[in-house]
Image 1 (cartoon, rainbow, N blue to C red):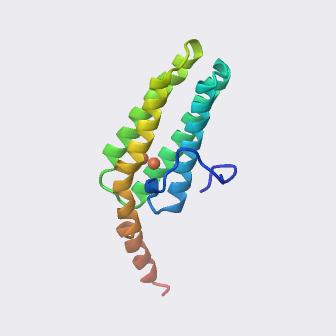
Image 2 (image 1 turned 45 degrees about the horizontal axis):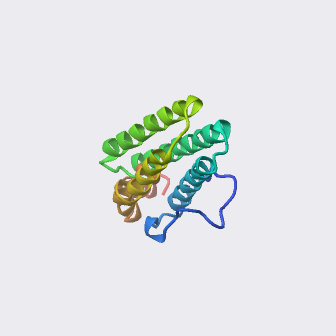
Length: 155
Ligand SMILES: [Fe+2]
Ligand SMILES: [Fe+2]
């Protein structure tokens, strides 16, 4: 699934070391960092509450889609630590909702940017980096399903 409208020739804040080797996931992470850059721009350039607020709304929407995609992938591949991973996603999502509400009445400062950037890059390099090798090594669940299909009565 490719939920982003277009590809980016340049993604701010992206470093090659963030790559997990799964193209779709890397593309989604680039998109999230791109959305973070938009939040960063609107805050640093003091573009007004509505631009700032809706840049947070967009980041939150993308985060929700990406988290759902990752969790579905982990479920499909039978990854055991999905519970811990999902709760990290949920925790971040709740924080994003708080920031979104806060942005309606208050200005957002550098500490919010620091928190968002730190969380995204730490999560990608940390816990996301844990499930990627498991998926890249081949899914036991998918493999056993495939072998069962080959042994169907019609074969
Ligand atoms: Fe994740
Ligand atoms: Fe991720």
